[in-house]
Image 1: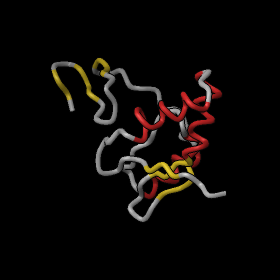
Image 2: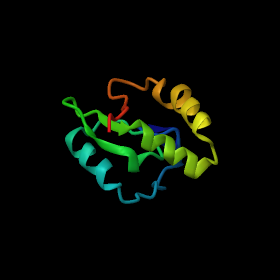
Image 3: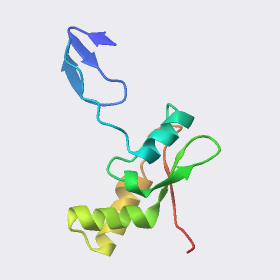
Image 4: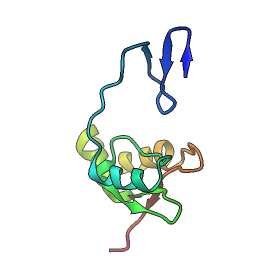
Length: 107
């Protein structure tokens, strides 16, 4: 979609002048698999290593504990802070019909 010389990417809040394209980096293998099943799948940025798969509707499924460990490794959070961040900023966010699912593993 074009608005007065600015191209708006439907899946991002970034805008680029006409003729300038966003660099496309290779997708994480798990993200690519889910995207091939559901081209409208929504992903939690920064948590690709915690993707476990997808459900019957093609919704990305994440390992909650791995997400917490990613936060602790990358953001200098302790376990309590990572859990709080996950609950209020990630798990609690509804971003559409294909909002990712976060599960607690039993093993």
